[in-house]
Amino acid sequence: MTRRSFLACAAVAPAAGANPGGADAFRRWFCWLAESLYFMKQPPAEVKDCSSLLRFAYREALRPHTAEWARHWGYDWLPPIPEPRVEASPLFFVGAEARHFADARHLMRFNTRKIAHRVEEALPADLLFFRAPGGESWHAMVFLGRSQFENSGDDFVVYHTGPEGKWPGEIRRPTVRELLRHPEPRWRPVAGNAQFLGVFRWRVLLGEG
Image (cartoon, rainbow, N blue to C red; front, side, top):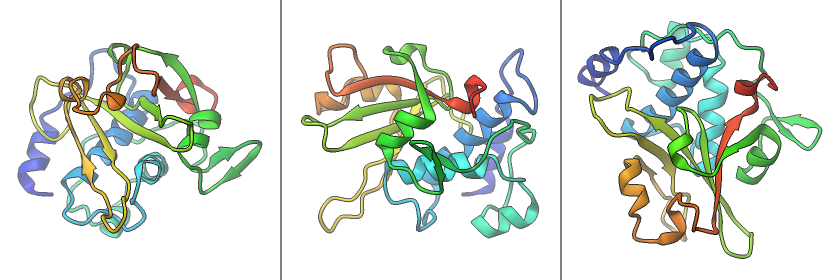
C-alpha cells in the first residue's frame, strides 16, 4: 500500500450519526482490514481462502492498533478510526466451543445472523454467503459499502476466491454492480439465485458477541 492510498483513506469521513469507538468503529476497522488485503502485494500467509480473510479481518479489528501491531502486519500507516470498544473475543464459535478456526459454514451458522436476503439491505461489514449445489462447499464475501481507500460512488465487496488445483487463488474487489452481473449466475446476490443464502451480520454487531 502507498501513501496515496492513505490520503484517500483519510479523506473518507465517518457516516453521519456514527458511534465513535462502538459498533461503527468495529465495522470500519473490519472493512479497512478486509479491503487492505486487496491492495497488498503479498497478503499474510494465513489468508488463503474466503473464511481466512474473514477470520483475519475480524480478529485484527478487535486488536489494539498500536505501532507495533502495524509493523507486525506490514502497515506503514493506520487509518483515523477510533479503537472499537465492543465486548467480543477474537475467537470463533464452532457449536458451543470457542476456537481460533472456523470455516465459512461455521462462521455463518454460529458467528453471524441472517438479517436480509437482499444485498441492498447490507451494511458495511455484513457478509454475503453462498453455497454450491449439493451443499458441499460454502463461500463468503465481505460487503464493504464505499471504499476506504479511494473516492468512489460505488459499493464494493471483497473476497478470496480460494485455491483451485495448483492455482492459489486471489483476492478480488468487484463493485456490487459488477457482482450482480457476474458471468456465473451462482455468484449473483439476487433472490432468484438458490445458491445465495443471504446477508448475514456478525453477532458482535447484534450485541451477541
